[in-house]
Length: 297
Image (cartoon, rainbow, N blue to C red; front, side, top):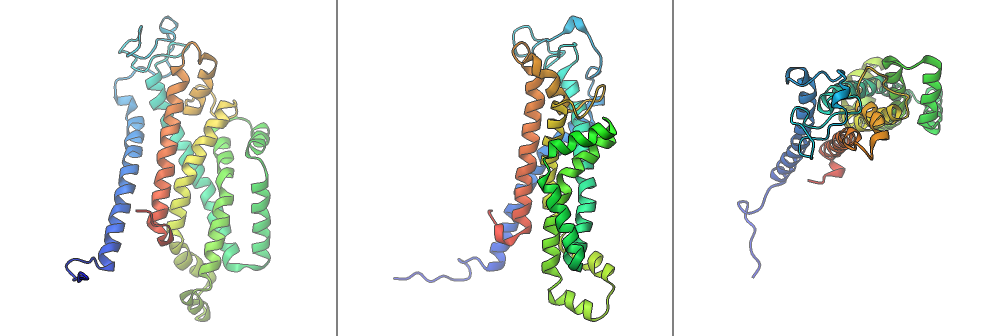
């Protein structure tokens, strides 16, 4: 006998959609909360009673983490070759790492979104010029481009932000261009064009809000990419310079002590891995939340 499905036993499409959204929001919160806690710990480091991250004490050089033999709970994660507290440097370096990543994302997103909107909506020679510029950017190896810029402008935080912005602007321009090309043919945009609405108003007030979800996903994913790029540059001696501290710079400082004091490089490397993994998973969750074709929850 076939069992009858009644409204009380079958979920409606609206209920299923609500459940999917709830699971998606739960995943976003579960992934975003650890990132917020890590960032908060870095920002609150000066008030946690930790040693000065730049204070040197050669008598306390290469003390192992507290749970290892010879460790000291006054330095929970040990000290580096100059006797500086690894935990204090890890939290202090996290602030600069996050600041550089956010600044790099914004510096790349603004021109990339602007060029993508103009190219996708205006088409014609503007689209051709922007497309060729994007292709040229994507064809250039990032490290070679970074070396050229830093050699010409010198090592400084503003130059580093400029270099990091070069990582992502082309991705924004390419994706937003495709979105704008699709939206310009939608009936509500065609209606605005036939009504004589100004081009600038159409792009800023109608197309840009409709690509906000895509921009959010791209920015989140680019955050992890830029953290890795900054770490790679600092590891090669092209990024953050002393006395500034970042996770990539700490990783570079500890690479020569891997056999004698592995914790100097291990903890910043672990921090980079955890943060980038969380950011990428968060970006994937946001993509699933904003794109109905990619629902995974």
